[in-house]
Length: 116
Length: 114
Image 1 (cartoon, chains in turn purple, green):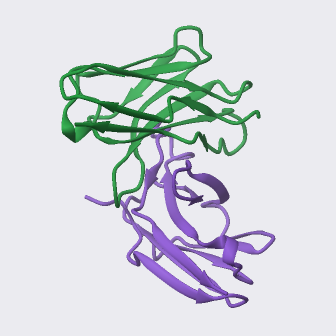
Image 2: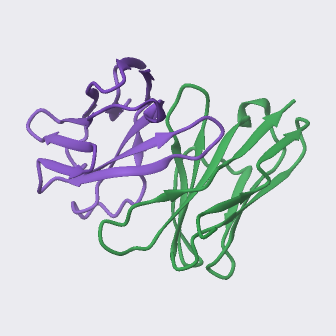
């Protein structure tokens, strides 16, 4: 049972355009969401996060949007650069719900290719 | 380098052998996590330590797996009687326990069981 779903295995975007990566979740206990970026042969690198008390969080070229009613979040990268080419993972956690779990639940990832 | 470090980076072993991996977290972080990642999947949680106490274990952590964090600093993950299905990337992460408690990952140990 996949609690965090990234339905697009891959995405290709032209340099300078917007990249939009999507993520859906099913567990209503999740209240904290993170995006990680992963290059081959390296561990995931933390990119940006959002808690359920917000619907948007911005950090430079990266913005994450959260739609709690739809249980959907998205990562926007503007403008996209060739160095952004990597696998992006969406992760979720029940941080505030009092469930006491510290684990992150990850999606399967979306491979982003930014074409020069 | 003050990030999470893991050793070895690669390990090839024969089925039935025991292997041990080490993780050194970011120095001020009291929380440490182990995850496993197989091809085409996201990382899957294995276990969590707060200081030296192991507080959470996944059902993925069979009795052939054992993790320790004896002094609340580095951690080891041992797999006994390895099987081909254990071939994966083993990732360690640490967090401070403060604020939003983001987890920061190490480069991983790639295990291949032949």
